[in-house]
Image 1: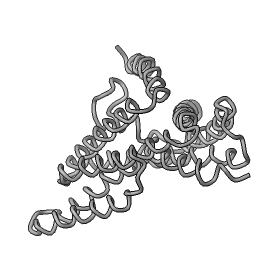
Image 2: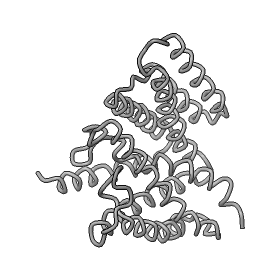
Image 3: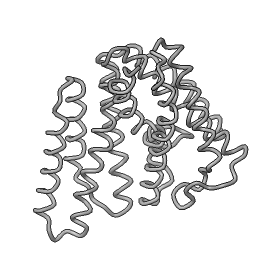
Length: 266
């Protein structure tokens, strides 16, 4: 079976399941997001270990779990959790001063917890706000539109590499196509989902495209540091979980804060 066929099969199965989980919400949605975040931090640790670092494998999942619990309970303890993660990681590093790359290990432990825990947990609080299901669907399918356009336009007319040292396949033409497609997809989805089509909504598309492409490049840079092609092997033809979710990591926080701070503006 070729790579394209594998991708199509995964998409044909995954998208309906994802839709069902988002629409169902509640405990089902929270459990899926929690397991996804824990799986993501596991892949993160694998990549940075390939780069020679040794992040703390206890603090990483524990920190992610605390962020997820905080989000499911709609508490405002994220700053306290962040402080706890910093303190625990630094204390761990302080007791291992002679270990090679001790400070690097501390930094990667903190970065991994924030990346897979703090950032990704925004998908939980996004689903819980008024019209949370609609906002979650808009964020998800706008990101799909962004990724699809970037790939299609890049393959069709891509000539100028955007970041050859990080991801040689990404082009400025693809990035531009993604920006245009997402700028059109967001207001179209907002209308279809019954979200308020205020002036700020027209600005969300470009912002979302930038956030999605930043997440994609960040994960590509991480893999480049670890000298690995894929973050894992969870999805045949697609790579690992982070390979599929990289664009969503920054989109979740963007759409959440946009929905509560910017969207209400006239």
